[in-house]
Amino acid sequence: MERSERGIDRRRLVKWGGLSAAGVVAAAPLVDAGIGHAAPAGRDKIPPDTRPGGAYDRYVAGLAAEGKFSGVVLLSYRGRTVLSRSYGLADREKGIRNHEGVAFNLSSGSQPFLSVAVLQLVQRGRLALSDPVGRHLTGFAQEIAEKVTIHHLLTSTSGMDAPMPDWQRVFHSRAEVHEYHQQWARQATLVGVPGAGSDGHLPGGGVGLTIAAQIVEKVSGMTFWDYVHKHVFERCGMSGSAFYTREQWLTDGHLAHPYMLQADGSLVDAVRNLGKGSVDPNTLGRNPGRGFIGYASGDGFATARDLVRFAEALRDGRVLDKPYADMFAGAKLPGSEPTSYHAYTMPISIVNGQWVIGRGGGAGGIGANWSIYPDTGWVGVILTNCDGVPLLDVCLREVAAVTGAPVNPPGGG
Image: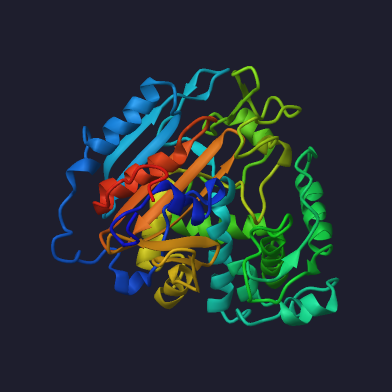
């Protein structure tokens, strides 16, 4: 395959972050990129493939007809919904259907909310991205406290590792989750040079995001959950989104239940079957219901429409002032491909001459992706609650519909 801005394939998408960051995602300064501004010449028309009955709509409908898609897809253009489709059930036991107002677990797709929280505190002068960990927190090894900065934490270049998180443990309260993360973070060790490379391949590489959340807590005087609810979700008008608890997951009818694949080919409700895990090779053994409540590295919930509201709040300055919105979305490090980069908690790239901002996530029974196309004013959301959805392929189809980039066959060289 020719390495150009015009083509995008599955191999390249995986390099941008795999299923745990499945978004076709990229970043650019939000002011200059033109969210809410006049589109560049030739980009002010709605592409036919994005419309109801267009190629993207037909593709997702075909998957749903084959039992390979359960969830919601949404395309918004300059704040106006162009395509909104919902398929399958949010709760099979109660017969609740998926719809645009259902909130889905985002898995690691909620990590950018942490970045926004940090940058809000930077904007207020409460901390600096160059601050070392030890300026705000105690209990860390001296080399971490002195050498690892907040910038390193948000770009996953801290050089730290920690023990593998206990994915089998069932948590029962917010206090238990909070205490676990406090202790786990302080087991971090420095195994590389801060700023020299990615921590993502390490078993406990996500510990940096936990530390960043604890800095937010220390500086703000609020729990990470309360801070994000008040200063991110509420500012954006994301009324259906939150870090919900497992108790709420079981009782709130607007929360989609994840359905995990089992060895016999059946699907089970993760939240009602904590003793079972997914056999999907991408999330083997994982059950997102065990965590009780998400934290810095993921498991926040959002509706499709709320993710569009998040994009609009970034555009109009409600959640971050423009310079800090630019900082949030801007490329920080080169990626594995010529036009791919890394921003804060987001893999990023340029597709067919357009910037795209966003994030994806996946866990047992969960697949999520949201993308912002700032050059043209598009927002795309894909939320699923069932194993077996070809999420990477759906992402490719969305990007092709919005940008006009060709969908190259998987494995194309």
